[in-house]
Length: 162
Image (cartoon, rainbow, N blue to C red; front, side, top):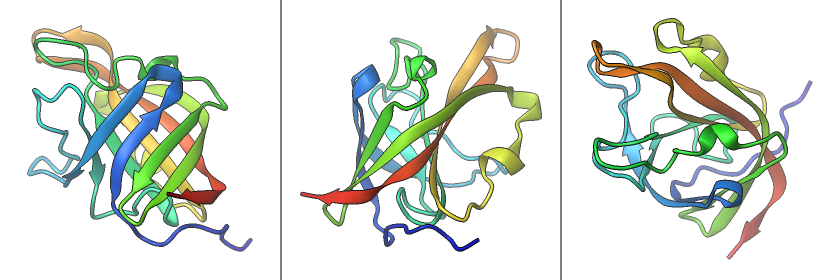
């Protein structure tokens, strides 16, 4: 099967998710010393990050966007991520002036200790998006959540231009 159409590479600048009132800027993320994807700065409640070494949102492959569920002081950008439904829209404004629109396919929670890297980060033959945040209960002894919430979405073409 041939790859589906996708957009050229362009950095994301803004994440818009109307169903949960998200309107947030982006920062670049990288793989940290632990071998896992770093998260955005811990005290930024309205900031998302994308794995800049991977596909950009709308480009062929799986683009990865991460954001916080909460901070020490307040709910954060992905506080309502788990309430998205199949068919909801996710729009990403890109540096080239296009908006890549995605459609939610599924939402799932995975234990952090058994996170399915092969499923979430898999290379795909079309343009896909993963939104990732913390989920499950908070483990006070480990000072982290027990799960990750992952939204799976695919690109809806054509992209729009400003």
